Figure 1 (cartoon, rainbow, N blue to C red):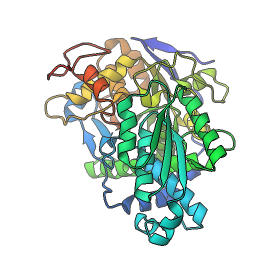
Figure 2 (figure 1 turned 45 degrees about the vertical axis):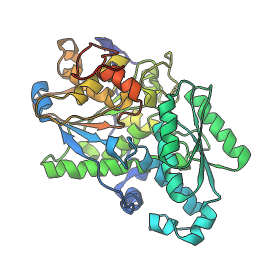
Figure 3 (figure 1 turned 135 degrees about the vertical axis):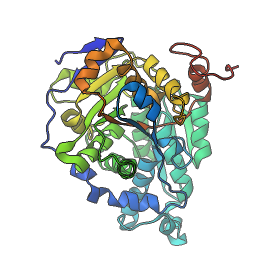
Amino acid sequence: MLNIEQYSGIQMIANPHTTSGFTPSFLSKRETEPVRHLHMSLDDYAATPLVELSALARRSGVRSILVKDESQRFGLNAFKALGGLFALVRVICKHLGLDYRVITMDWLQEPEIQRVVSNMVFVSATDGNHGRGISWAAGMLGCEAHIYMPKGSVPARAQAIRDAGRAEVTITDMSYDDAVRHAAKMAEENGWFLIQDTSWPGYEEVPKWIIQGYTTMVYEAVRQMQKMGYSRPTHVFLQAGVGAMAGGVLGSLKCIYQDALPCVSIVEPDQVACIFESALQNDGLPHPASGSGETIMAGLNCGEPCQITWPILRDHADFYFACPDSVAARGMRVLAAPMPGDQPITSGESGAVTAGLLSLLTSKESLAPFREKLGLDGDSVILLFNTEGNTDPDGFYDVVYDGAYGMRGTVPGPRHP
């Protein structure tokens, strides 16, 4: 097992096995070009903002902090629809014998195609954002979706899934991982099409399509950085649940930058950190999380790693962090009430944990050993992904306005009733 370093309640593992030899070809620019072709065919497609927090960077002693704000993606408050839509379209194309490389949304809405698609039924399990994307895609394509959510899911997130498009939503009494297994069982029993954003032996094709779908935000960010005058980030912080998004982004960055890959850190809730646990065991295999499974970071509350992306995270991430909920809460407040001159960003619990960690790394003297190991200094250009906006209004107000999970009174404004 690897050694865990811990300061101020934050745990870190340094990866001794980082290698430059393995490149995930399914995430290459060429292989993911159909993803961008599809997304850009949507009437409401627009690149989400890359927000530069210049004042925070100066205070943090780094050159730049850049936040890719996915809370504005398709009006759905999260990035997940990028993967869900592409996977649905790939399944439809395979079912109908269509060429996915040239397909557009207009083509899929032609009457002769709709006659078949309208009878297709999709199913998935979700903690919120993935299901919302599936519902939205199903609504656009005129087909049916069934979404299962784990116990403790916020009713507002369930209703947002229903409102996004066309889905029947059930909050179960199961854990997230058991809800995934239930969705797979329902697909098999009913002849439905499973669209799940994690993988296991025998179920890898669709998750690969979902992961490829996420790459649109990476290529957008790279172009936006270049327009700002930055050739590449020096550091990237990626939050992880099963690790599909983190692995997809990291794999894309590897394909883009090759041996000049930035320093990449994977960040998880300390009570459900399956990537951290897998790295800790140091045997090359994925392992389930060992914590209590309780966290405010609902989108990251996943106990079993995605087997497609685990090898990418194992071989190319430089550091793994496990953080208490207070770190995510700090990030929500840091982004919502930024330094004077910086643009505020609305971020949910799962979207903000990397911002919270970064702000602690650059402000707490007790975390200086971590800061030095990561090489954060005046030349650092840091890229973060705000993967979700305010998906739980009550929880958001409790954290941002009422100071839950951290010091109180951070953000001026009305107290939550």
